[in-house]
Amino acid sequence: MTDDRTPDPDFVNLLEWELKSIMRRQESVNGASTTRRSVWPRLGTTLAIMVVSMLAGGAGTHAVTTSTGNQTAQLYIARGEALLEIAQTRLEHFARELVATQSLVEQGVVHERESRQIEALLVQGEAETEIRQLELTETLITGKEPNAALSAPLVGGTDFVTLRMAALRRPMQRRLELVVAQARWNQELVDAGIASTSKLRADQTEVVAAEEELTGLEKRAALRASFLAGELSAASVELQGMRFAAIAARAMALRQIEFFVEQDKRLRQLSERGVASRSELRTVAIDLRTVEAHVELANLELRILEQKLENESKE
Image (cartoon, rainbow, N blue to C red; front, side, top):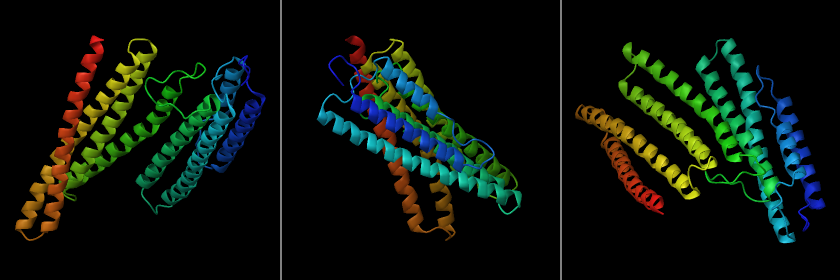
């Protein structure tokens, strides 16, 4: 860019070419999908308008100021393109898999649960593709790597951090729905005396993990909003984010301890009857000790973070 902060012509040409590439890839993904619903929100046009308006308004003026910086920016852009291509390839694969699986479900060959699992992968693929496109757009504007920190500044007035978190929420919600449905299915099998409670306990642990994951994301989004509103400093919002992560990790580890304790008890009973091997018992014992260590680690991490937050509040 020139000294009057007018976008450098070479950078503008590169940006225009990249935006056209995004639109071509977008059209390719939309055209490849033959599922009953759109597999991709039409974000390409929105992002293109966003970037052009940013440049027109003088946003993103800190990108690519020297030849060395321009080369580095092009490497970041190339990497962003590659990640987007990978995500789109996976998305196209899941779209085809869903069509094929839905056909098998209609024929009565496979259970509808398989279709729902493929659909969850498709939702995850959509989110990954949207996130990669947002990351690439941010890099096109800044010439730098995407900044995912809760304290990251807006880029030309756009909150890419919150946009990416919003994209993440959809597959997390879908995963939660699936594991809840699976747990209910296994509960019915247990009630009917067809399945053991060990699988149900594992499913219940999965439900807790999915709930913690979604709750953690929502807390991070709330922290981000508080930071943007000026209610939290950059240091505080990052410490709070790490604190929430440590609390979630401890909660999950405590739930896993319950599961492994029950597993250990069940295997010992089976071992007395000669059904379970010593190797299985050792494996569960190691898993239990590992999770207990994770709880202690999370407790230490929380103590450290609490101390840092206390020091931060005094400053």
